[in-house]
Image 1 (tube, helix red, strand yellow):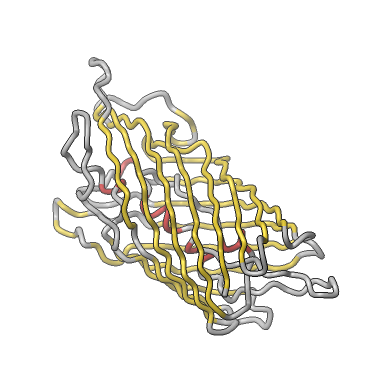
Image 2: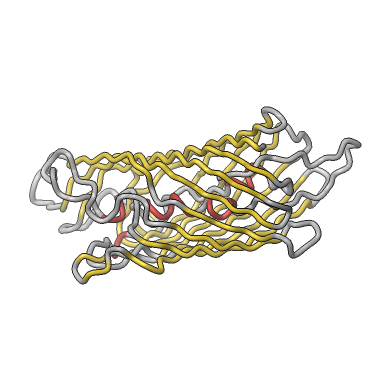
Length: 340
C-alpha cells in the first residue's frame, strides 16, 4: 500500500522537492479498512504513502502492511456509554486485523498503477438483543480469516513540473466473502449469519476518486494533504429483502514530516473520516454512520536504499457516531516496502 521513502536531499546536502509518481496508494490506504468494518468510523484511516514519502522514480514496488483495531469501547454520539437501549443489540468486542499486500508500477514520473490485496482476520462477540429484565446471555462468537475486497487504483500527477499535485481514480472489487457467508460458531446465535457489515467483503463494486498535494515547507519539514471519496455503484445483494449497500465514505488527511535525517523520519498525521449509513434490508442502518478524527504519530525508517518500514499509532480525539457502536481506543499500523 505504500511507496518507498526516497532521499529528499541531494549529495551536496541541498533539499530538492519531493515528487509523487507512485502516490495512488495515498488515498487507497484510507479505504480498505473503512469498507469492511462494523462501526462507522473505526477503520484505519492512516495515509500510508504519505507516511513512507513520495517517489518520482519509475519502477516496481512491493509492500506489506499490518493494521490492528480492537473495538471494545461502546460509544454513542460524542460520548462513551455503559449500555444500549432495550430491544437493541449489545455487542461485546470486535478485533480486526488486516494484512494488505500491494504491488505498484510507475512507468514514468506522471503515472502509477497499484493493486491492493487485503487479508481480513476478524473475531466478533455479542450478547445479542438486550433485555434489561433478563440476565446477560452467553456470548455468541464468530471468527473469519479470508481475502477481502481488492482495490485497483490509477493516479496521475503530471500537472506540475514538481509532480506534487495529483488525482486518482480507482475501483474496489467484490472479491471478499459477503452477505451471509460467515456464521457465528458458538453461543445462542450459533449457525446464524454474521451482520453484513462484519463480513470480510461488502459485495459491492465501489468507485474511488481522490486528490492529493504535498510540499516542502522548510529545509527539514514536508507537509501534505489528501482527500478521497468512495461510493458503491453496483451491489451483488440487490434483491428486495436481501439487499445491502455500504455507506459512502469521505476521508481526509493532513500531515507533517521532519526530514532532517532521511534515515529516521518522525511525523504526525491528522486523519478525518465521515461515513454515511449502510443501506438495505441486511444493513444495520441505525449504527453504521458517523464522523471521527484521529491524531497519528509515527516514524519511517530507511533500512537500505530499497527497503523501508513505518510504524504508527492512531489515537481518536473526536467521534460523533450514530446509534451505539463499538469503537477502538487506539489502532496500530506497520508496513514494509521494497522498490526495484
